[in-house]
Amino acid sequence: MINNGIPDLKYLFEPRSVALVGASKDEWKSGGMFINSMLKDSYAGTIYPVNPKESEIMGLKCYPNLADIPGEIDLAILAIPSAAIIPAMEECARKHVKFAVVHAVGFSEMGAAGRDYEKKMVDIAHEGGVRIIGPNCMGIFTSRGRVNTVVPYARLPLEPGGVGFVGQSGWASETMLRLGSARGLRFSGVISIGNQSDLRVEDLIGYWGGDPQTKVIAAYVEGLKDARRFMQIAREICPHKPVIVWKGGSSEMGARSAASHTGSLAGDYEVFQAMCRQVGIIAAKSMEDVIDLAIAFNCPVLPPGRRVGLLIEAGGGAVASSDASAREGLTIPQLSQQTQDRLAAYLKDKVPPSTNRKNPVDLVWVPIGDTYGVYADCLEMILSDVDACVMVAYGFLQIDQFRSRIVELRDRLKKPVLYVPGNPSDQVLGMEMAVKDGIPVYLMPENAIHCLGAMVRRKEFLERL
Image 1: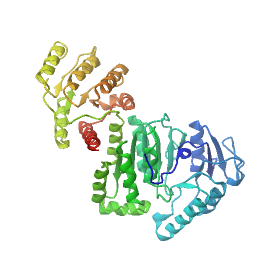
Image 2 (image 1 turned 180 degrees about the horizontal axis):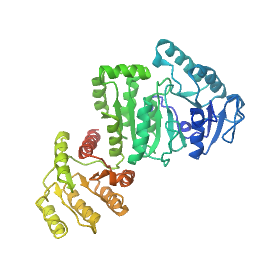
Image 3 (image 1 turned 120 degrees about the vertical axis):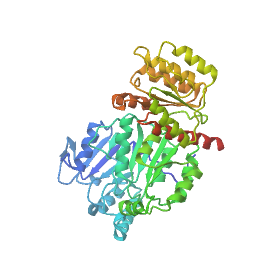
Image 4 (image 1 turned 90 degrees about the vertical axis):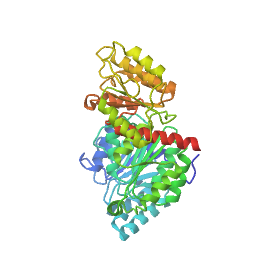
Protein backbone atom coordinates (compact mmCIF):
# COMPACT_ATOMS: atom_id res chain seq x y z
CA MET A 1 0.00 0.00 0.00
CA ILE A 2 2.70 2.52 1.03
CA ASN A 3 5.68 3.48 -1.12
CA ASN A 4 7.42 6.88 -1.37
CA GLY A 5 10.62 5.47 0.12
CA ILE A 6 9.20 4.63 3.55
CA PRO A 7 12.00 3.04 5.64
CA ASP A 8 11.62 -0.17 7.60
CA LEU A 9 11.51 0.97 11.23
CA LYS A 10 10.99 -2.44 12.83
CA TYR A 11 14.23 -2.35 14.83
CA LEU A 12 13.60 1.21 15.96
CA PHE A 13 10.44 0.04 17.71
CA GLU A 14 11.71 -3.46 18.55
CA PRO A 15 15.45 -3.04 19.12
CA ARG A 16 17.28 -6.22 20.00
CA SER A 17 20.16 -4.22 21.44
CA VAL A 18 20.52 -0.66 22.74
CA ALA A 19 23.78 1.24 23.26
CA LEU A 20 23.57 4.17 25.67
CA VAL A 21 26.32 6.65 24.81
CA GLY A 22 26.86 8.91 27.81
CA ALA A 23 25.72 6.28 30.28
CA SER A 24 25.81 7.35 33.92
CA LYS A 25 25.50 5.86 37.38
CA ASP A 26 23.47 8.90 38.37
CA GLU A 27 19.79 8.10 37.87
CA TRP A 28 18.98 11.82 37.72
CA LYS A 29 21.11 12.32 34.62
CA SER A 30 19.60 11.26 31.30
CA GLY A 31 22.34 8.67 30.72
CA GLY A 32 21.41 6.96 33.99
CA MET A 33 17.68 7.59 33.78
CA PHE A 34 17.40 5.85 30.40
CA ILE A 35 19.18 2.71 31.59
CA ASN A 36 17.21 2.63 34.83
CA SER A 37 13.98 2.98 32.83
CA MET A 38 14.80 0.05 30.54
CA LEU A 39 15.71 -2.14 33.51
CA LYS A 40 12.51 -1.26 35.38
CA ASP A 41 10.43 -1.82 32.25
CA SER A 42 12.03 -5.26 31.69
CA TYR A 43 13.63 -4.49 28.35
CA ALA A 44 14.32 -7.93 26.88
CA GLY A 45 17.31 -7.16 24.66
CA THR A 46 20.93 -6.36 25.43
CA ILE A 47 21.88 -3.00 26.98
CA TYR A 48 25.36 -1.67 26.29
CA PRO A 49 26.31 1.32 28.51
CA VAL A 50 29.09 3.40 26.91
CA ASN A 51 31.30 5.57 29.12
CA PRO A 52 35.12 5.47 29.05
CA LYS A 53 35.26 6.43 32.76
CA GLU A 54 33.21 3.49 34.04
CA SER A 55 33.60 -0.30 33.96
CA GLU A 56 30.12 -1.13 35.24
CA ILE A 57 26.82 0.75 35.49
CA MET A 58 23.72 -0.59 37.26
CA GLY A 59 25.07 -4.12 37.09
CA LEU A 60 25.83 -3.92 33.37
CA LYS A 61 29.28 -4.08 31.79
CA CYS A 62 30.26 -0.63 30.52
CA TYR A 63 32.24 -0.10 27.32
CA PRO A 64 34.67 2.74 26.53
CA ASN A 65 33.29 3.19 23.00
CA LEU A 66 30.97 1.62 20.46
CA ALA A 67 33.79 -0.19 18.64
CA ASP A 68 34.46 -2.36 21.71
CA ILE A 69 30.89 -3.63 21.89
CA PRO A 70 30.94 -7.25 20.67
CA GLY A 71 27.49 -7.46 19.09
CA GLU A 72 25.40 -5.57 16.56
CA ILE A 73 23.56 -2.46 17.71
CA ASP A 74 20.03 -1.77 16.59
CA LEU A 75 19.58 1.48 18.51
CA ALA A 76 22.07 3.98 19.89
CA ILE A 77 20.79 6.59 22.33
CA LEU A 78 23.18 9.55 22.39
CA ALA A 79 22.78 11.23 25.79
CA ILE A 80 25.68 13.63 25.26
CA PRO A 81 26.12 17.36 24.47
CA SER A 82 26.01 18.57 20.88
CA ALA A 83 29.79 19.18 20.82
CA ALA A 84 30.36 15.42 21.26
CA ILE A 85 27.81 14.28 18.69
CA ILE A 86 30.01 14.25 15.57
CA PRO A 87 32.65 11.87 17.04
CA ALA A 88 29.86 9.68 18.45
CA MET A 89 28.08 9.59 15.09
CA GLU A 90 31.34 8.60 13.39
CA GLU A 91 31.48 5.64 15.79
CA CYS A 92 27.85 4.80 15.00
CA ALA A 93 28.61 4.85 11.28
CA ARG A 94 31.68 2.62 11.62
CA LYS A 95 29.67 0.20 13.78
CA HIS A 96 26.74 0.30 11.29
CA VAL A 97 24.25 1.10 14.00
CA LYS A 98 20.74 0.93 12.53
CA PHE A 99 19.14 3.87 14.39
CA ALA A 100 20.41 6.71 16.56
CA VAL A 101 18.41 9.02 18.80
CA VAL A 102 20.09 12.41 19.22
CA HIS A 103 18.68 14.31 22.19
CA ALA A 104 21.09 17.24 22.17
CA VAL A 105 20.15 20.81 21.23
CA GLY A 106 22.28 23.28 19.31
CA PHE A 107 21.57 22.34 15.70
CA SER A 108 19.40 23.86 12.95
CA GLU A 109 17.14 25.55 15.48
CA MET A 110 20.13 27.83 16.23
CA GLY A 111 20.57 29.22 12.71
CA ALA A 112 23.05 28.81 9.85
CA ALA A 113 25.98 27.42 11.84
CA GLY A 114 23.69 24.90 13.53
CA ARG A 115 22.24 23.85 10.18
CA ASP A 116 25.73 23.14 8.83
CA TYR A 117 26.60 21.12 11.93
CA GLU A 118 23.37 19.16 11.63
CA LYS A 119 24.01 18.40 7.96
CA LYS A 120 27.51 17.15 8.77
CA MET A 121 26.06 14.80 11.38
CA VAL A 122 23.51 13.41 8.92
CA ASP A 123 26.10 12.97 6.15
CA ILE A 124 28.32 10.97 8.49
CA ALA A 125 25.37 8.84 9.64
CA HIS A 126 24.28 8.00 6.10
CA GLU A 127 27.78 6.84 5.18
CA GLY A 128 27.31 4.02 7.68
CA GLY A 129 23.62 3.41 7.04
CA VAL A 130 22.49 5.04 10.31
CA ARG A 131 19.03 6.63 10.47
CA ILE A 132 18.52 9.46 12.96
CA ILE A 133 15.67 10.54 15.23
CA GLY A 134 16.27 14.16 16.25
CA PRO A 135 18.26 16.11 17.20
CA ASN A 136 16.60 18.45 19.70
CA CYS A 137 14.10 15.79 20.73
CA MET A 138 12.99 13.53 23.57
CA GLY A 139 13.23 10.38 21.47
CA ILE A 140 11.15 7.25 21.57
CA PHE A 141 8.52 5.35 23.49
CA THR A 142 7.84 1.84 22.28
CA SER A 143 5.63 -0.59 24.14
CA ARG A 144 6.76 -3.45 21.89
CA GLY A 145 10.44 -2.78 22.56
CA ARG A 146 10.05 -1.45 26.14
CA VAL A 147 12.25 1.57 25.56
CA ASN A 148 11.11 4.92 26.93
CA THR A 149 13.27 8.02 26.55
CA VAL A 150 10.31 10.41 26.33
CA VAL A 151 9.28 10.13 29.99
CA PRO A 152 11.84 7.67 31.41
CA TYR A 153 11.04 8.70 34.99
CA ALA A 154 7.43 7.47 34.65
CA ARG A 155 6.16 3.94 34.63
CA LEU A 156 3.58 3.86 31.86
CA PRO A 157 1.35 1.01 30.66
CA LEU A 158 3.39 -1.13 28.28
CA GLU A 159 0.65 -3.26 26.79
CA PRO A 160 0.91 -2.79 23.00
CA GLY A 161 -1.82 -0.68 21.48
CA GLY A 162 -3.07 0.69 18.21
CA VAL A 163 -2.14 4.40 18.33
CA GLY A 164 1.02 5.79 16.76
CA PHE A 165 2.02 9.40 17.51
CA VAL A 166 4.86 11.54 16.18
CA GLY A 167 5.43 15.07 17.41
CA GLN A 168 7.82 17.93 16.68
CA SER A 169 7.60 18.79 20.34
CA GLY A 170 8.74 16.89 23.38
CA TRP A 171 5.90 18.47 25.32
CA ALA A 172 3.33 17.22 22.79
CA SER A 173 4.82 13.71 22.85
CA GLU A 174 4.93 13.61 26.64
CA THR A 175 1.37 14.94 26.88
CA MET A 176 0.13 12.33 24.42
CA LEU A 177 1.81 9.60 26.45
CA ARG A 178 0.86 10.75 29.93
CA LEU A 179 -2.69 12.00 29.37
CA GLY A 180 -3.44 9.53 26.58
CA SER A 181 -2.41 6.57 28.74
CA ALA A 182 -4.43 7.88 31.67
CA ARG A 183 -7.47 8.21 29.39
CA GLY A 184 -7.08 4.58 28.23
CA LEU A 185 -5.16 4.86 24.97
CA ARG A 186 -2.43 2.31 24.30
CA PHE A 187 0.35 2.97 21.83
CA SER A 188 2.22 1.16 19.09
CA GLY A 189 4.82 3.91 19.39
CA VAL A 190 5.40 7.56 20.26
CA ILE A 191 8.22 9.56 18.68
CA SER A 192 9.45 13.01 19.65
CA ILE A 193 11.18 13.83 16.37
CA GLY A 194 12.57 17.32 16.96
CA ASN A 195 14.37 18.88 13.99
CA GLN A 196 13.67 16.04 11.53
CA SER A 197 17.28 16.08 10.40
CA ASP A 198 16.89 12.65 8.81
CA LEU A 199 13.74 10.66 9.60
CA ARG A 200 10.71 12.90 9.21
CA VAL A 201 7.13 13.04 10.32
CA GLU A 202 5.94 11.49 7.06
CA ASP A 203 8.35 8.55 7.45
CA LEU A 204 6.71 7.63 10.75
CA ILE A 205 3.21 8.14 9.37
CA GLY A 206 4.09 6.02 6.36
CA TYR A 207 5.56 3.24 8.47
CA TRP A 208 2.52 3.09 10.76
CA GLY A 209 0.32 3.16 7.68
CA GLY A 210 1.72 -0.22 6.70
CA ASP A 211 1.86 -1.62 10.24
CA PRO A 212 -1.10 -3.95 10.91
CA GLN A 213 -0.93 -3.30 14.67
CA THR A 214 -1.38 0.46 14.30
CA LYS A 215 -5.03 1.48 13.84
CA VAL A 216 -4.88 5.25 14.45
CA ILE A 217 -2.08 7.67 13.45
CA ALA A 218 -1.67 11.11 15.03
CA ALA A 219 0.89 13.89 14.71
CA TYR A 220 1.86 17.33 15.93
CA VAL A 221 3.55 19.23 13.09
CA GLU A 222 5.28 22.61 13.08
CA GLY A 223 6.86 22.49 9.63
CA LEU A 224 7.27 20.01 6.80
CA LYS A 225 10.55 19.32 5.00
CA ASP A 226 8.71 18.00 1.94
CA ALA A 227 5.02 18.94 1.96
CA ARG A 228 4.33 17.19 -1.34
CA ARG A 229 5.68 13.86 -0.10
CA PHE A 230 3.82 14.28 3.20
CA MET A 231 0.52 14.73 1.36
CA GLN A 232 1.23 11.89 -1.07
CA ILE A 233 1.83 9.51 1.83
CA ALA A 234 -1.24 10.76 3.70
CA ARG A 235 -3.35 10.36 0.54
CA GLU A 236 -2.35 6.68 0.39
CA ILE A 237 -3.01 6.00 4.05
CA CYS A 238 -6.19 7.96 4.79
CA PRO A 239 -8.53 5.57 2.93
CA HIS A 240 -7.29 2.80 5.22
CA LYS A 241 -6.55 4.44 8.58
CA PRO A 242 -7.48 7.72 10.27
CA VAL A 243 -4.64 10.25 10.29
CA ILE A 244 -5.03 13.07 12.84
CA VAL A 245 -2.78 16.13 12.55
CA TRP A 246 -2.49 19.21 14.72
CA LYS A 247 -0.56 21.88 12.82
CA GLY A 248 1.19 24.45 14.99
CA GLY A 249 2.09 27.93 13.78
CA SER A 250 -1.38 29.13 12.76
CA SER A 251 -0.57 32.65 13.95
CA GLU A 252 2.37 34.89 13.15
CA MET A 253 3.70 34.53 16.69
CA GLY A 254 3.16 30.76 16.61
CA ALA A 255 5.06 30.47 13.32
CA ARG A 256 7.89 32.51 14.82
CA SER A 257 7.96 30.22 17.85
CA ALA A 258 8.09 27.14 15.59
CA ALA A 259 11.14 28.55 13.80
CA SER A 260 13.02 29.07 17.07
CA HIS A 261 11.80 25.77 18.53
CA THR A 262 12.71 23.25 15.83
CA GLY A 263 14.02 25.43 13.04
CA SER A 264 10.79 24.79 11.12
CA LEU A 265 9.17 27.03 8.54
CA ALA A 266 5.52 26.80 9.51
CA GLY A 267 4.17 27.60 6.05
CA ASP A 268 0.70 28.88 5.19
CA TYR A 269 -1.73 27.49 7.76
CA GLU A 270 -4.86 27.87 5.62
CA VAL A 271 -3.19 26.16 2.65
CA PHE A 272 -2.21 23.28 4.93
CA GLN A 273 -5.78 22.92 6.21
CA ALA A 274 -7.13 22.86 2.65
CA MET A 275 -4.63 20.16 1.70
CA CYS A 276 -5.67 18.10 4.72
CA ARG A 277 -9.34 18.23 3.71
CA GLN A 278 -8.42 17.20 0.19
CA VAL A 279 -6.52 14.03 1.16
CA GLY A 280 -8.68 13.06 4.15
CA ILE A 281 -6.48 14.12 7.08
CA ILE A 282 -8.47 14.83 10.25
CA ALA A 283 -7.38 18.28 11.42
CA ALA A 284 -7.09 18.82 15.19
CA LYS A 285 -7.06 22.23 16.83
CA SER A 286 -5.14 21.49 20.05
CA MET A 287 -3.32 18.74 21.90
CA GLU A 288 -6.48 18.00 23.84
CA ASP A 289 -8.27 17.62 20.52
CA VAL A 290 -5.62 15.19 19.26
CA ILE A 291 -6.18 12.96 22.28
CA ASP A 292 -9.97 13.25 22.05
CA LEU A 293 -9.93 12.36 18.34
CA ALA A 294 -7.56 9.44 18.89
CA ILE A 295 -10.03 8.12 21.48
CA ALA A 296 -12.87 8.53 18.98
CA PHE A 297 -11.10 6.63 16.22
CA ASN A 298 -9.95 3.98 18.66
CA CYS A 299 -13.59 2.90 18.38
CA PRO A 300 -13.73 0.17 15.71
CA VAL A 301 -16.95 1.38 14.02
CA LEU A 302 -18.06 4.64 12.42
CA PRO A 303 -21.63 6.00 12.49
CA PRO A 304 -23.56 5.17 9.30
CA GLY A 305 -25.23 8.58 9.31
CA ARG A 306 -25.78 11.87 11.13
CA ARG A 307 -28.69 10.88 13.42
CA VAL A 308 -27.74 11.07 17.11
CA GLY A 309 -29.55 9.57 20.06
CA LEU A 310 -29.13 11.08 23.53
CA LEU A 311 -29.61 8.90 26.61
CA ILE A 312 -29.17 11.07 29.66
CA GLU A 313 -29.49 11.36 33.41
CA ALA A 314 -28.76 15.09 33.39
CA GLY A 315 -30.96 17.65 31.65
CA GLY A 316 -28.14 20.16 31.26
CA GLY A 317 -26.15 17.52 29.39
CA ALA A 318 -29.01 17.22 26.89
CA VAL A 319 -28.99 20.96 26.24
CA ALA A 320 -25.22 21.07 25.81
CA SER A 321 -25.30 18.03 23.52
CA SER A 322 -28.11 19.48 21.42
CA ASP A 323 -26.33 22.79 20.93
CA ALA A 324 -23.07 21.02 20.03
CA SER A 325 -24.88 18.73 17.58
CA ALA A 326 -26.26 21.73 15.74
CA ARG A 327 -22.76 23.17 15.40
CA GLU A 328 -21.47 19.87 14.02
CA GLY A 329 -24.32 19.46 11.53
CA LEU A 330 -25.71 16.42 13.35
CA THR A 331 -29.43 15.79 13.87
CA ILE A 332 -31.29 14.61 16.96
CA PRO A 333 -34.37 13.03 15.41
CA GLN A 334 -37.56 12.21 17.25
CA LEU A 335 -37.66 8.48 17.91
CA SER A 336 -40.29 6.42 16.13
CA GLN A 337 -43.61 6.00 17.92
CA GLN A 338 -42.89 2.29 18.23
CA THR A 339 -39.60 2.97 20.04
CA GLN A 340 -41.22 5.60 22.26
CA ASP A 341 -43.94 3.14 23.24
CA ARG A 342 -41.39 0.42 23.98
CA LEU A 343 -39.40 2.80 26.16
CA ALA A 344 -42.48 4.01 28.02
CA ALA A 345 -43.68 0.47 28.74
CA TYR A 346 -40.23 -0.70 29.79
CA LEU A 347 -39.51 2.28 32.06
CA LYS A 348 -42.89 2.27 33.82
CA ASP A 349 -42.32 1.80 37.56
CA LYS A 350 -38.53 1.70 37.00
CA VAL A 351 -37.78 5.43 36.90
CA PRO A 352 -39.59 8.65 37.82
CA PRO A 353 -42.21 9.72 35.25
CA SER A 354 -40.96 11.95 32.46
CA THR A 355 -42.42 13.31 29.26
CA ASN A 356 -39.06 13.08 27.51
CA ARG A 357 -38.98 9.71 25.78
CA LYS A 358 -38.70 11.13 22.27
CA ASN A 359 -34.96 12.01 22.06
CA PRO A 360 -33.24 13.06 24.17
CA VAL A 361 -34.38 10.27 26.46
CA ASP A 362 -34.10 11.54 30.04
CA LEU A 363 -34.16 8.80 32.68
CA VAL A 364 -34.08 11.46 35.44
CA TRP A 365 -32.84 9.03 38.07
CA VAL A 366 -32.58 5.24 38.02
CA PRO A 367 -33.00 3.68 41.50
CA ILE A 368 -30.27 1.40 42.81
CA GLY A 369 -30.64 -2.18 41.61
CA ASP A 370 -30.24 -3.24 38.01
CA THR A 371 -29.30 0.34 37.13
CA TYR A 372 -26.78 -0.40 34.40
CA GLY A 373 -29.14 -3.00 32.93
CA VAL A 374 -31.85 -0.36 32.54
CA TYR A 375 -29.43 1.92 30.74
CA ALA A 376 -28.20 -0.87 28.47
CA ASP A 377 -31.75 -1.94 27.56
CA CYS A 378 -32.75 1.64 26.75
CA LEU A 379 -29.57 2.09 24.72
CA GLU A 380 -30.49 -0.90 22.55
CA MET A 381 -33.96 0.50 21.89
CA ILE A 382 -32.63 3.96 20.98
CA LEU A 383 -29.96 2.58 18.66
CA SER A 384 -32.67 1.00 16.51
CA ASP A 385 -33.64 4.52 15.36
CA VAL A 386 -30.32 6.42 15.20
CA ASP A 387 -26.76 6.09 13.87
CA ALA A 388 -24.92 6.70 17.16
CA CYS A 389 -25.75 7.38 20.79
CA VAL A 390 -24.22 9.70 23.36
CA MET A 391 -24.85 8.78 26.99
CA VAL A 392 -24.58 11.28 29.86
CA ALA A 393 -24.84 9.19 33.02
CA TYR A 394 -23.52 9.02 36.58
CA GLY A 395 -22.08 5.56 36.91
CA PHE A 396 -21.49 2.05 35.61
CA LEU A 397 -18.27 2.30 33.57
CA GLN A 398 -16.33 0.21 36.07
CA ILE A 399 -18.92 -2.58 35.75
CA ASP A 400 -17.55 -5.14 33.31
CA GLN A 401 -21.00 -6.40 32.30
CA PHE A 402 -22.13 -2.89 31.36
CA ARG A 403 -19.12 -2.22 29.15
CA SER A 404 -19.48 -5.68 27.61
CA ARG A 405 -23.11 -4.93 26.77
CA ILE A 406 -22.14 -1.67 25.05
CA VAL A 407 -19.41 -3.43 23.08
CA GLU A 408 -21.83 -6.18 22.04
CA LEU A 409 -24.42 -3.64 20.84
CA ARG A 410 -21.80 -1.56 19.06
CA ASP A 411 -20.32 -4.51 17.22
CA ARG A 412 -23.65 -6.12 16.35
CA LEU A 413 -25.39 -2.95 15.19
CA LYS A 414 -22.24 -1.27 13.80
CA LYS A 415 -23.07 1.97 15.63
CA PRO A 416 -20.76 3.78 18.07
CA VAL A 417 -21.71 4.64 21.64
CA LEU A 418 -20.00 7.63 23.27
CA TYR A 419 -20.12 8.22 27.02
CA VAL A 420 -19.92 11.34 29.22
CA PRO A 421 -19.77 10.57 32.96
CA GLY A 422 -21.79 12.82 35.24
CA ASN A 423 -19.11 12.71 37.91
CA PRO A 424 -15.81 12.11 36.06
CA SER A 425 -13.70 12.16 39.23
CA ASP A 426 -15.65 9.14 40.50
CA GLN A 427 -15.20 7.17 37.27
CA VAL A 428 -11.51 7.63 36.43
CA LEU A 429 -10.74 3.91 36.36
CA GLY A 430 -13.94 3.09 34.49
CA MET A 431 -13.22 5.77 31.89
CA GLU A 432 -9.80 4.24 31.20
CA MET A 433 -11.27 0.74 30.97
CA ALA A 434 -13.99 1.92 28.59
CA VAL A 435 -11.55 3.59 26.19
CA LYS A 436 -9.46 0.42 26.18
CA ASP A 437 -12.64 -1.39 25.14
CA GLY A 438 -13.13 1.03 22.23
CA ILE A 439 -15.87 3.09 23.92
CA PRO A 440 -15.07 6.80 23.46
CA VAL A 441 -15.39 8.62 26.80
CA TYR A 442 -15.23 12.40 27.32
CA LEU A 443 -15.38 14.79 30.23
CA MET A 444 -17.88 17.11 28.55
CA PRO A 445 -20.78 16.61 26.10
CA GLU A 446 -19.35 19.18 23.68
CA ASN A 447 -16.13 17.16 23.33
CA ALA A 448 -18.08 13.98 22.66
CA ILE A 449 -20.28 15.59 20.01
CA HIS A 450 -17.29 17.29 18.35
CA CYS A 451 -15.55 13.94 18.01
CA LEU A 452 -18.73 12.24 16.83
CA GLY A 453 -18.92 14.88 14.10
CA ALA A 454 -15.36 14.00 13.06
CA MET A 455 -16.33 10.32 12.92
CA VAL A 456 -19.33 11.15 10.72
CA ARG A 457 -17.18 13.22 8.35
CA ARG A 458 -14.65 10.40 8.05
CA LYS A 459 -17.43 7.95 7.22
CA GLU A 460 -18.67 10.31 4.51
CA PHE A 461 -15.10 10.73 3.19
CA LEU A 462 -14.72 6.96 2.88
CA GLU A 463 -18.08 6.67 1.10
CA ARG A 464 -16.94 9.18 -1.53
CA LEU A 465 -13.87 7.16 -2.48
